[in-house]
Amino acid sequence: MAFRLKLVPTVTRINFFRGWQFTAAFSIIITIVALASVAVQGFNLGIDFSGGTSIRAESTAPPDLPALRAVLEGRHLTDVTLTEVFDPNFRADQHVVQIRASKGGEDPGLSPSEISDLQRALQDVDPQLSFTQTDSVSGKVSGELFWTAFLSLVAASAGILLYLWMRFEWQFAVGAVLSLVHDAVLVLGVWSIFQLKFDLTTVAAILTIIGYSVNDTVVIFDRVRENLMKFKQMSFFDLLNLTINETLSRTVMTSTTTLLALLALLIWGGDVIRGFVLAMIIGVTTGVYSTVYVATIIVLKLGINRDKPEKKDRGESRHDPYAHVGH
Image (tube, rainbow, N blue to C red; front, side, top):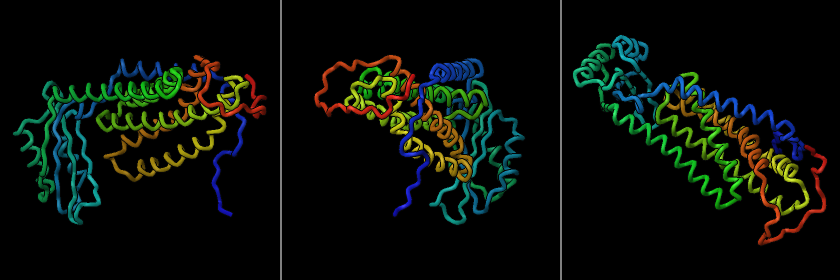
């Protein structure tokens, strides 16, 4: 007999909505706190959005990162990031370092003379360093990148709203999109409260979170639609409870395996992807919560029209397995 791992029992009878008023209040409070932090503190913008200079350096010997970082910190720059890049396609003697620096102000990028001076100082520490690529992002371009990233988030949410509206009732679309906004706002709030580096990698993580969260929500909404045809006499409150219980094992297993992979990347993935992975961990965790306690509760309170004729009647079950799950 094959061994099957079960993180939750096959059949559960949890009343997820018993204290929905408290979970709704909690969601509203943390969303307000996140938005307030964004409005008051703003973000610790990376070079992608604030402007600056990016330098790619290579060496045949492992770089002395503390010594290189000491050179950068002595240049009186407002924003400095030094990371070693790993790639399985690199040669055995190929060691790559990515340097990002900004001097702030209206023109945060380093001038050609400042770049040359910085490169000479770095080569004094490691004479084997060679500089293969240098890019500068002006303040104007970084501002355009910020608004493009913001519009991409809005467009993704609008597309999901339209898709769900066409596939389900409009109540489901509203619930799903508000839960996605909830997840995105919480990630933005964490980045603002703790002043973590906010760059294009963070935006990519938020877009990934939106896609992951909507997938989980659609699975539950599909089961809700099936149960609406199967249990026509069951109250909508009990039907939503039944649906979440039926999909609980799948939700927990999917989220757990995803988090295990993300934790491995967080520990051993290096600094380059750490911000992306951290945002994903927060998003996956809040995505499970928001699917149950934001999207589903919104659908519950909006209600749906259960008197509309169905194209195909799958028959009505006379047995209500969760009728005892009360309000």
